[in-house]
Length: 312
Image 1 (spheres, rainbow, N blue to C red):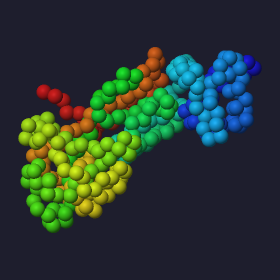
Image 2 (image 1 turned 180 degrees about the horizontal axis):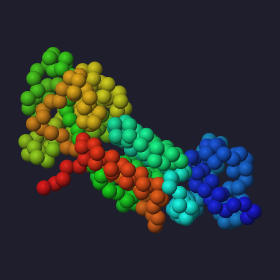
Image 3 (image 1 turned 120 degrees about the horizontal axis):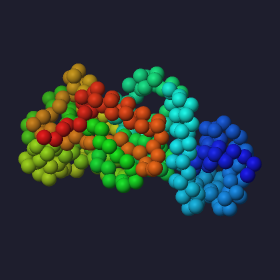
Image 4 (image 1 turned 90 degrees about the vertical axis):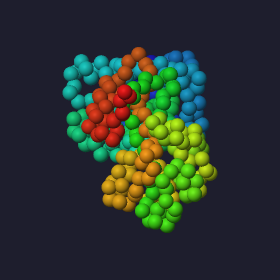
């Protein structure tokens, strides 16, 4: 095969990750026709069909997916070896990361300048949403993920927590009956959040310390009066005084401080969500992932609101 095998293998991986030749060719800065010809040569060399091609999308065949999963960690290892031998102080290349939007907006992105100042040659692609991303099939290097991690194909380390609180506006409270117990919530407008990807409502659990005082450990048992599937819109609904809801403390902290929002039922603290740093399990972990994980862990240690509470 009269071409650089490693470069073509990298190009194949990028096609799988982007889902089409056009995006991959733009990322790699080569012509689409050249890229298509290289992949055809790779398929001829291997004697297998790697990709299903349609006018709208390209997807890997069963053999292609297996090939992608086998060669991706090897290519990462080769890249890392080259960097280490060259004794580069700064990392380079692309790091794709996914995380919940509150983590991105209130922890990671505000502190990125210091990280990029240290690693100016590293390119970042950051996705932020409430969707659980398939890291392998979507070509994502690592993620910060909330909740309990059950996927055995991922390496996971709990690095912190996301605390929540129940809140509303002073104006809403002034026009409705007082809220002093969990039972009082049944008489109030319940603002709920629904995960767009699954259609499931996010449940409001109280902390283990007060679980016995609340039925099933859940604050709201009534049907939601309003439901939102976009986090930013949901927070706007809270700020508009449309009802009672819950939000990460990191998100509402400025509004609590300014008095625009009021935390209610402080005697019923909400359960914090554990946060983990995760990445696909493989024989070799790229250095850029390790460096980013170390930076995130140090960042959490510097921001008390995100630190996990040690169990005594």
